[in-house]
Amino acid sequence: MAGTEPRVARRRPVYLDLPRIRLPLPGIVSFLHRVSGALMFLFGIPLLLAGVGASLASPESYASLRDALAHPLAKLVLVGFVWAYVHHFFAGIRHLLLDLHVGVDLAPARRSTVVVAVLSVALTLIIGVRLW
Amino acid sequence: MIRRQAVGAHYGLRDWLLQRLTAIVMAVYTLMLLGVALWHGGIDHALWTRLFGGGAFRLASFLFMVALAYHAWVGMRNIFMDYVKPVAVRLTLQSLTVAVLIAYLGWTIQILWGVHP
Image (tube, rainbow over all chains, first blue to last red; front, side, top):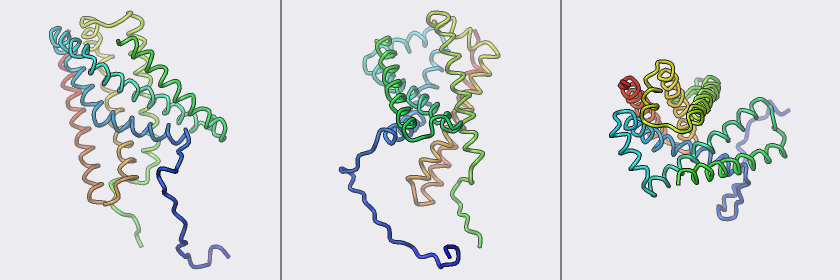
């Protein structure tokens, strides 16, 4: 009987030929959820606080922040964080829906990752164009 | 035999739930801020300080940052649990994360309650 036998550590095959492993889109979206979250924790929060602090301190610091953000490199970084926020937002909404048992089956779960990826890139592009 | 290890975490239904609740708090705040910006057709310094000078918005912003801090803690803890196997290194990273997040909340209070429109 299954429960009474002594447990033997089974030697399971490990296949980790990284260049040959094709991560499917749900895997990529999930990984990017993590990457975007870690980036926002490491760099996003301190930059956000520094930015909001400068924007509120005085009209002069508000203006100098505007000038600093007008630099193309700053805009590029800003667009990067916009993508991180938007992607994390939509991937999170998808998770909440999955928690409510919406779209749990394989096909809809795969389709919703397409929606997350496309929507976040599209919204980032729209905001990026408006920033420029 | 007690098989639990000091991993700097517990067996977390509460964290799982709070991860979601904090996400909803942040999403609502984000949409609200977006709505304010669209309603006024953009934001300048006068409107910006007037906004943060109001008690309700200040409190909402503080709530956002508290939610963000807790959300970031759970997320970073998950990442450390998955990728950092030596317990000493993991506990160090997790402690640093908590310390940094608490410091960020202190910074947030300084910013939010330093606004005098």
